[in-house]
Amino acid sequence: MLSKFKHNFKFFKKINFFKNSLLKIKSNKLNSLIKNIKFKKQKILLKIKLNKHKFTSNKKKIKLFTSYDRILLLLVGVVFLIISYLSIPFFYDSDKLIDKVKNELFKNLNINFNLTEDFSYNFFPRPALSFRKVSFLDQVDNLGEMKVNISPGKLFFLKNINIGDVTLKNINLNINKKNYNLFTELLKNDYSNFKFEIKNSNIFYRNIKNDVLFINKVNKLRYYFDKKKFSNFLIADNKIFNIPYNIKFQNNFNKRKIETLINSDLLKLKIENQFSYKNLNKEGVINFFYNKKKTKAKYSLNKNVFKFTYSEELLEPNFIYNGIINFKPFFSEFSGNLKEINSNQLFNPNSILVQFLKTEILNNKNLNIKTSVNANQIKSYKDLINFALKIKISEGLIDINETSLSWLDDIHFKISDSLIYIKDNNLFLDAFITININDHDKVYKFFQTPRNYRKQIKKIEFNLNYNFDQFTVRLDDIKIDDLIHEEVNKNLNLLILKSNKLQNRIYLKSLMNQAIKNYAG
Image (cartoon, rainbow, N blue to C red; front, side):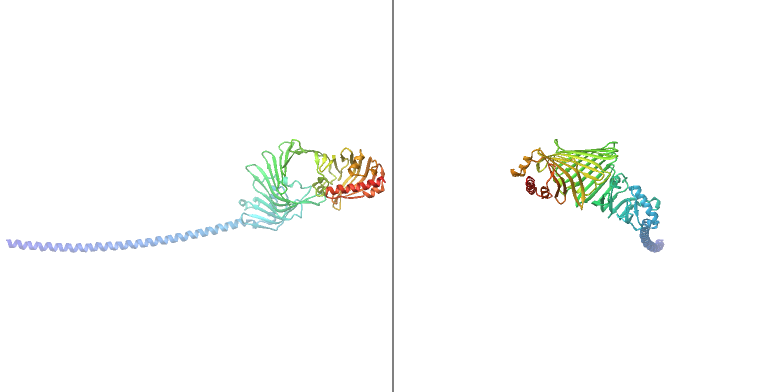
């Protein structure tokens, strides 16, 4: 029994061992299978990752290539559009384009321009037309250049074109009686959408005979609108007679007032003007600053009359001038009172008055002017007093009839039958002179005449011809107390004055004493 039990025990033990062996084999195969499956799975996943990375990389490359291509195409398209857009004026009809620009210029500047087909179109910095030959104001000799900017927003259709800034260069502009108010009229235009400039040009001011009086060099002149001040401005850098000066005009539309500033550092001169045109009777004030001295002019203007008062800014001014000008019919009258007058302002050939008379601008048959200036004495000649200068301009002729002068209270000079004229570019004065002598003894004392020649004289008369440029005086038909003396006429026929005052005194004393000696016999 025991043996049988042992036998069964061994048998079950073998069976259990076999079973465990089988289970171990299956477990190993299963683990191996599982490992194999896991490996294959990992391999598949790795392939999937590699393929996915490769796909993603290729996709990025495709996207990057597509992006560059798009940008390049976009740039090419933009450039093409810009060039096409800016090239639009090339497809316009030239005649129609010129007519359109001329009409726009007239609308903005109120000036008729003559434009030729000799023009070019510029792209940058903004669309612009450049005309090489331009004239205006019905003049053919002021050919110059003009650049007209075109509004970029309205290039597609010719009829919609708007012009912008306008620049003139190398213009020779003639100013005469027909267009003398050109620059003030330009201040009335609307510059809110454009600017108007003139550069490197010349302005020729001409008289009625079309002769050039003077030339104004324009370095730069600009019109523009200031929105804050609601004003048109004119700013110019000029040169006249080789003297540089600057101008600034402001036309304030709100206040209806024009303010002007003219400044020349070389001349130490500054002129300020304020002109109000809000009322029918327009008024203004001009301040002159010259070498630290200040003078002021007040004026008023209506339809037919211009009035002014001009004096120094002092409690007791050295001079006061008053004037009135009637426009219809034209007539003017001026008067002035001075403490003293400088003889150089009257007789020096380089004085402003002499040079102004030589322009012959006053030799106009339509001018009628009367001027009177009273001076207490003449500077540097203290004995010459009560100088009354009378100037009359009528029918193109200038005279100084009724002009008078006294030497102390002893001699009185009076001018009649006078005429101021130009001959061979020299300024002359022809006049008849009357000298009334109250005390001949004082005259002889002044000339230091020897006593045995001091013959009584009451009146002297003669014809005078004075050359302002040559400092020469001719005396003809000399009468002493209504009698002509040939020897005196020979002695005083020609006087050649000196620039030096002392030399003139010595020269005239010697000459007069010789004439007195011949008269006394």
